[in-house]
Length: 254
Image (cartoon, rainbow, N blue to C red; front, side, top):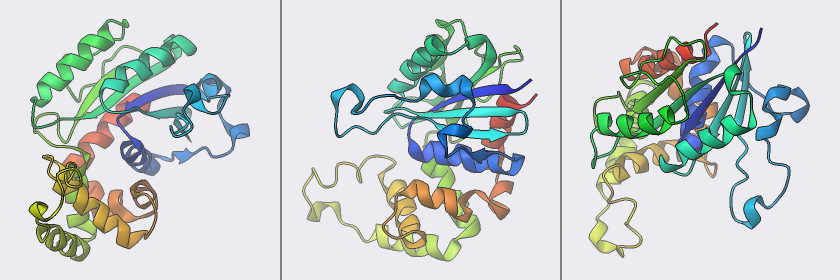
């Protein structure tokens, strides 16, 4: 019997990382609609523009298929969208047939445990078997868990992990990117131009973007995460990467 797992994430970068970490276990992306597990068909939007917004990205999940398991990785607009995506998905598919996971960032405003507690309360209202600690996966046959990046304890984001990966596989590029970002003086630009850069994770995001722009010039960061060695080779031995990969393995395991 095919196991199915639904993973809600905050954005396309997170989705690309999930795909990269499942790749060593034999998972690959489903590109053609004709090869998609029929179970997930109701998650594929049938009309455009979505909700009458010509500028909005069509919210189709990233679908993966692997050994006796199919996975839908669904990007939301920030952590507030995680609950709504999960709620809507459970209303569209047979909830008894899927494991549910959520991956979100910690931040500098709330401890990771608070981010977990808030989302866990929401998901329990949907009768999901959420475990008592971030990073764990419930033993219920449906399985359910929440992972708070970077390590379920520290403040940080996905980029905290990606900088560590770059240090492992692209040390020279990382050093150059850090040196470049360190030269930026926010006072020389308007506050609106620097509003993202001056956020707590702004510099880390800029560093990751700088490395990705060299590896895949002119392309989105998630293309580099997919194509390049961010989550390969010695990066797979990093404790932070192992923790996320272990979490995902528990969700999709038979």
